[in-house]
Length: 246
Figure 1 (cartoon, rainbow, N blue to C red):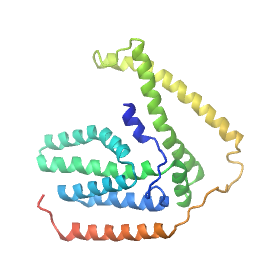
Figure 2: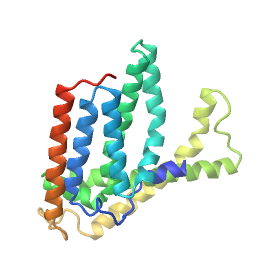
Figure 3: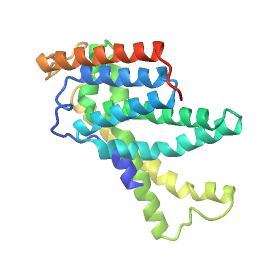
Figure 4: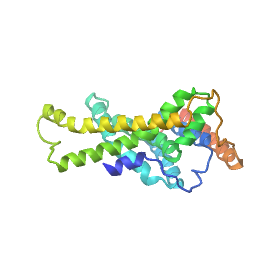
């Protein structure tokens, strides 16, 4: 579980994809997301998925995106089973499950290679209200931390003899109480420390605060942006006018 949770933590890596402007990375992620929805055959969706993995290799983040895909396999299997149960057929059920993995991977490419600071800059560039930006970026920062706290508390309670995997449903729910109480306490303490840090830094004292860094598109950002948009248009054209056998 620690291995999966580590995939949601941002780690700065030196790669050609990481140094791109965050707006370009967001555009590429949206294009992959749109192609995953537009594709209607296994071949087309598999091509999109392989392209995403190729970008992950270029960004030197294949292992981390593989962690998020491993976490999503459970939901993909659930989608496959539900569609198979309702009589959509084996091929259709597999197509829906593969599309889900492609959608998750397309968003993972952006979040794995974009720091919370860059995400904050994008939202400010989109004129999102400052309080909404702060709340969203804070959630992005602390969700992986809360996940790691949960796993640590579970390991600590198991070492004290708590059996989480045994008993009926009611007993398992009761066994989660020793997990939730320390987790809530830790979250409240962390929220208090964050509030004190915000107050000490004068959050909200100025209506239009400035930023230390400014986003500027360089020549390689424009090159990647133009190429990605061209490939996206060609892919949409192929999906619309050509039909794959399966």
